[in-house]
Image 1 (tube, rainbow, N blue to C red):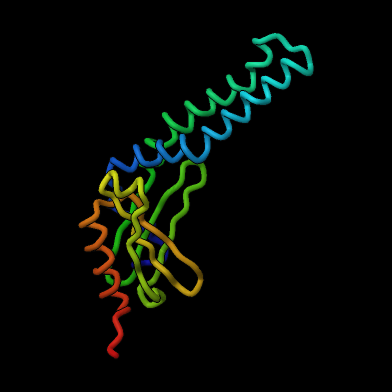
Image 2: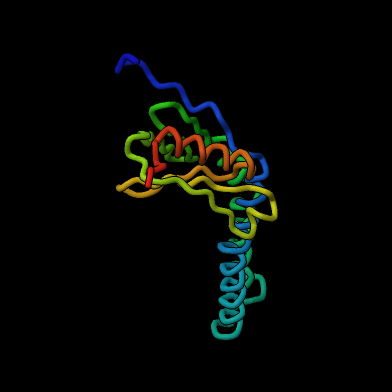
Length: 165
């Protein structure tokens, strides 16, 4: 490919069920603790600063607006921006809403590749392919389990991570 030509965006997208997974994660790990803290802060403000109930509810209202954004709007937008592709020479991933990150992982640099499934991924029959190099790791989330296993095996074969013992 000519160096001046723009590389086309990766062609493959994630499984649409990843939207539910991202929403669940946003609720459980981010928003729920934050909402509890905002409610507690509002309670303290109503007691200590003589705020009216409406003023004391302000932190909780802000958290609810942020929650709606994180749970309703961000996951579908993230899904639309996530793309990946695998060819003989590299694994190409692209993701991000405000800052788009494009990763090209050369097959020659891949040391090993795994599939992982947390409890929420298992409930949705999804898996993540994790690609390891000496510089760190990269992943492709939100894949159907069988497809993730095929991709893992394809990358392992192309990267020649199998060693004869």
